[in-house]
Length: 297
Image (cartoon, rainbow, N blue to C red):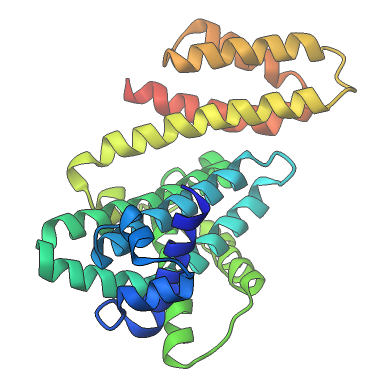
């Protein structure tokens, strides 16, 4: 995407947010962009085509930002969870009005099925981000109730947005993130010994493909955690067996790519890595994920 296209998208988003899709003309957009109509049509065939690109661009930007949080080895897992909650809250808060306007317009033009599918996929991606971060922070302690916690987080995030809209309240991003995590911590203690009432199929929208999507998310998380572990080892020059530990992580990565979650080699590599005290927490998360992935095979 070049700068001109990005500028059209940014200006289009601003105009649609203020006036709505139907009341905004292409003339207004090109005037604000300081471009000709020919330049607009070089990138977008219609106003609706631009609106569709805004939806896709917004979703891609959200996922890229989520990945940046996951990949930052300097941030601890609980802080990453807080950052994810804030990211999702801001994403929904900023884009929701625009998305509803576009979705309503598209529903009239194209029928509800493609738009419903888009909304469902977007919702599932948000749930996947909650899942990955919760798993990284709390591990096996929340296995039984992780989907209840995801339901709780998602409800709280939407409640903050509703209050801000209906009462014109303002909340600081840090307050939202810290409050939601406090509620999670309190509820983990209350829920962990109880039978779950909310299952993943209750809140995932594409029910027929839930298992495959969740399995794929867990595989991706497993590889991400291996990558993070490797970065931790590389940066710690005080590790006596640094070279051997890096070799072990490289072999572990190869095993993961071939999905050999039940192999003796993977067990041996994780056992070797776990002997290093400074890596114990990260390896524990990997072991928990490996066991889940192995059970699915």
